[in-house]
Image 1 (cartoon, rainbow, N blue to C red):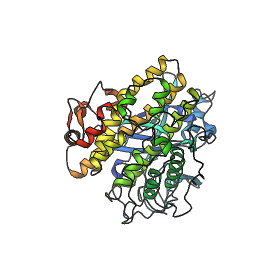
Image 2: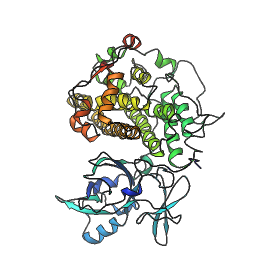
Image 3: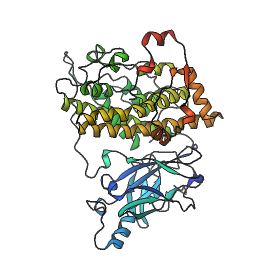
Image 4: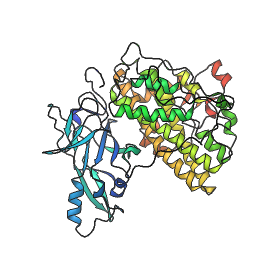
Length: 492
């Protein structure tokens, strides 16, 4: 049971942001998309830059027809029945901020309740009331027909203007309908020439009991496949309340490595990132994209202990990102194995270039969010469409689907970076745009180059005043020896 201390305000949970009186309800998704999973993340942003995270629960899989767009002869009765099975509530428990995405759903005399996985507080999915006296924010839903297709609409929060949807996606494959079989990752990377006993998923000695301990263990895991498996396991433990605590307020919190170790097989293939940029065939491109960078675990482990005021929502967002990073690695290595069986992951050169920028930002969470998430990952939003088009022209629709999934997730990663960068700026009483530009001038070298994907950048919160006509002025002999950051175009 997490021992998290007193409740603190979070950017995604506040009694002032329950549903408002605006007539402008938010269109969330075609009803058909709710057929794939039973739980979805929703992230909203107001015109003022406030963020609000929600969870959509679909209780009964059978309520959605296979095609999701036609509701049969008794349309009004089917709509009413379906409406009664869809609920939306805030994503973080109002008690201590626990992630509610994995809450248990129980039926009681008055309806259905979501039970917080950390401390078993229960909240009525319709009213938000709890027997404990707390109240969670819940939001009414409607099903409306637009151009012959039914869509789900949600009433907006109060306390802001012009709310818009900036993220809508399934919570995880645990809530797929039906659940997929577990993936077999054993054949997707090269094997070490030396026979070694495989490490257990959970160490037999001193197993981690906090999220920070899991983050440091994963960063210190050289085997990329074991990293993926441990990531999935750790995030599941966190979301289901099976960890003792987050652990960022402990004086004994472990420290992350300055450079995560790699297995010798991969370390021998590390090259200058500029050399990778000149290699263009599809296998090489997929291999480079699959070069996993555990930004999410590092930001959790490195800055959590030095920022005890970080709310649970911060860790919920970055564990979600960690799960994405492992998903991307699995998708890309699987596609690489199918496209080029003779060159599994690890058989081609890789680079560790992005960790060079990480070292520059070690002293500051604000700098890390600015440089890694709002420069590097935002640059990914600019170049990804061109990469996807190359695969499309090559007649490779399977890779296109993988890369489109990754790009969609990357927009949410930049959104997360913007959300927490503006949160830090608000805590420090500084303007986020001017502060971002100052961080880039100190922690980046050269121009922040276009052409820019202005549409996806704006969706993630980055308006042009953040990045246009911006040049970094950092001078560092160590950086010059390691190569220019401008050559790096991969944000994951």
